[in-house]
Length: 466
Image 1 (tube, rainbow, N blue to C red):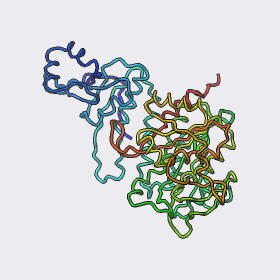
Image 2: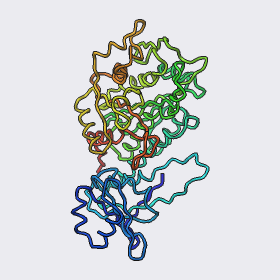
Image 3: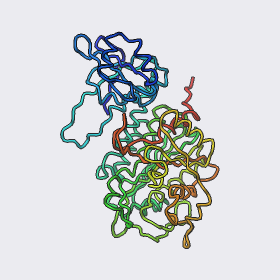
Image 4: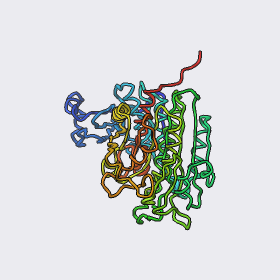
């Protein structure tokens, strides 16, 4: 990802004047006559996202006026890199540390584009920004780089981002921070007791695998992240429609998100013993594909009747969750593009979150609001558990009927987590369906910054030895 920050302004640096809409009239009254005439002739009213380029006496660009709701907000400046000509800019406003950091993050994310498969690159020279005063540069870089990692992993099509490539991406990240990586592949999954990951992925040409990354001192609080890594989902024998498959390269968005979150945790040096578990598979169709009505014995010993092969994500994740829960982590979180029902419930711009711990749920809600990464809690409504009953096994992987699909999927996963383990399940879109400033159409990191904030607040950074 290409973005530019400068350490200092120079004579050619162009000021950006942020104007919050409610104070626009008061601001305009204080301006010299020439600026008033320009604003009136240009029709600038300081609506959120509105930009006006003001020329100087020599005809060159001298000032940028930017309308916004809150100049401390994350996305306030994110639309500018795609709007402004190349050059060096600075924000002409006093920003608090959080606002300055937000401004830089938003600006950098506004420079994101995915052009890996373009034969003719646009070759755009992004405008650069002078680092806002009081900005936390480390937080900016880790947040932006982690977000770009998530977006890139999701945007790459399945031909180039199957289970082997996803494992390679995890290894590259692990090497950067001297973490340990273990990958269990193919029939070795059966020998090491990961039967549901194997069952879902065995029909694909690229073998299924469990990706296991660990980092941090052994006696630090355990934080474990589980990600759904379905690199492409045909639906299996319960085949999706053609239109239903169009975005299925994003079905590994949960895996991408936990890798991005791991990047942030390791880069910040948080005082945790981090573990990342990803079931990486393709849900394909062939002669040895798993079938509706099959019964699979999971790692935990719970038997599962397959009610629908297109509900594969919860099967891939349940063995990884059982493995994670065995260690009694201080915090366990999973991310997955698990259900369309969650999108119906909260839309495409919110992350649905289920949580067995009220304190953790409240922290996530507050953190999501603070860092503009909103999450919305849905209930683990126990009376719906009976909808997963099976006549031939301990549980079915789908509920009887359509209502409450996101809830019943979460209740399925809950069977593999101890009540004593603080656990959050994120059912995410992992995709921007429409473009917004700093958020182009395509893969997106959802819930990542909210959970990072909670982990940072709970566990903090490693103490340096004297």
